[in-house]
Image (tube, rainbow, N blue to C red; front, side, top):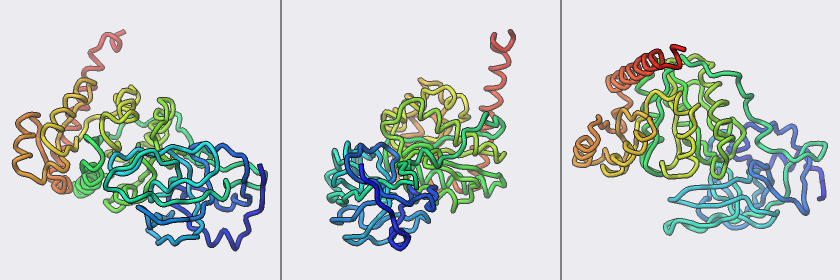
Length: 364
């Protein structure tokens, strides 16, 4: 391994990606090259070689900056799961690879959707390091793990059948509806791939505070283990609840069959914390399957939304097969709809507390 200084004039010319937003740039003073095996979360300096699918880079401010060939960008090694875009993994050495997410994720490409252009090609110039030649990793810039999670705020999760089922729009609409209803709302995207657009949509809708898994020290949640998922839940959940909001809105990325999503819903610390699920689906059959999948794991779905709500016929079908209310995604931003969902969540919370009080464990 070799080390060289990273001079300030050069640092100022770098385009720093969204995934690096929690990094203290003052710590970046060295560049490591040579025989290095990267790890997920390692920060690197890369050169843009050939533009492809991603021609713009989301900066730390979430502004999308034009990239040009020969630009130097600060990004993060990570894994990517996106059926509509790319599947990619952390490479095993510093060699030309791909920019697989606009938020700033560098990886070795495995698969791509047929509608995608070739992923932007980049060359790692070195791992970013501090003055002691210690590689910098996102795990060193995450929020502290709280001792407990305040159990008082109501918690609603938005999950879905797949990528692009309408989850992010539903989340921001829910936040806006609750804000209009007069509630203090905290929100987070708890799984996925580091990107600024989803984070900012929650901020723009009026949630405060807003976090994502990047704030817990992860560039993405693809290929993380159960321990990491639990750490994200406890870290993000603890900080959201510490703000003492009336309600917490959480987005779970991708679909229920995605490995990490499936694992998340089977972690008791997560499932027991959730008061209700709003499920986003592309069609009525997907809604029916999602409700059944979650119900089998004792996770209560309280409403359906998503892409299917573009079709009045699909709405009728979904209502018929699930027996649940189906809300147009944008209707979730109305205070009247937010009031109905809030009442449902409060009812579920009271039922849960009564069941706990009546259980043999409570009596003992």
